[in-house]
Image (cartoon, rainbow, N blue to C red; front, side, top):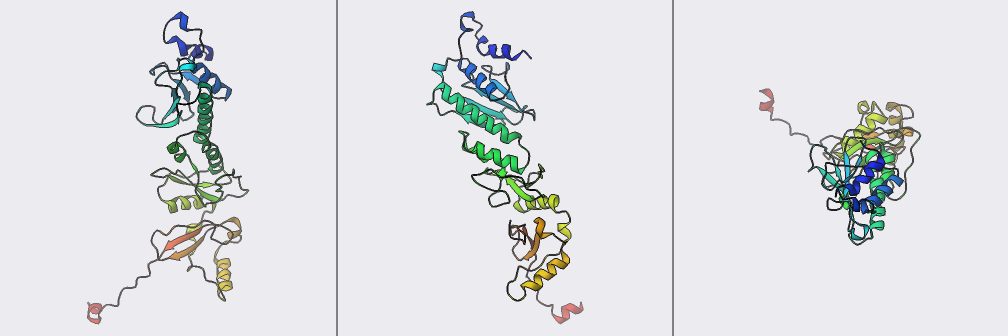
Length: 299
């Protein structure tokens, strides 16, 4: 690959005319601003108009252009468009990361574009619930399209570590939570607030919670479930039973409590167990079949 300096010169070299090679193009401003933001651009000579590309660690690519052109004069600039190609072999599989409004100066549009790209890359490459949620908060304040923000991973509303405005901090002990995308078909993952662990992508909320609990509290599946919590004179008896059958210190470390529910697919509830862990709902039907007729019982 040519040196960065020679790469930058390709922005105007597409015309092949010496008298056009000395001016400052809009693409030069974008290139320099990307470099100043500690991003590494290159010129994609295979693209129409020689797009400014940014290669990501997962072998996917961002393309930055304006109507397939980066060599136009700043005074002729309208709006940058940045596209992320999810699949390098399929040009139709992409996400719009940035699209300028069309009424900004070249300098203002370039600044908005680069700040959005930097925030999006930070979220795209972040690992773990804390890092993803905190970079999501930054991305949500940029000019990224609504669907791009909705596709970014962040801690699910109401789950451990969630804060809609302030960055979250890691916990000292492994704590289960759920991260999600807010797109039309949201993906969910079990995650941990103390380490970068993330579970597989799930469509189902409860399965993501259970993945997280498998990571933070292995063995929870073998513990007994109890009827939904009772208050009053029997509350101390119920707690004594829990202390007897659940491991010592289980709830102090945010361990889940399993309770029976008559509602199929009842959602697990964060923060409802003693100690602030998940209340895990175990379905048990209340249906009792009628006794068979005595003659039927003899058959």
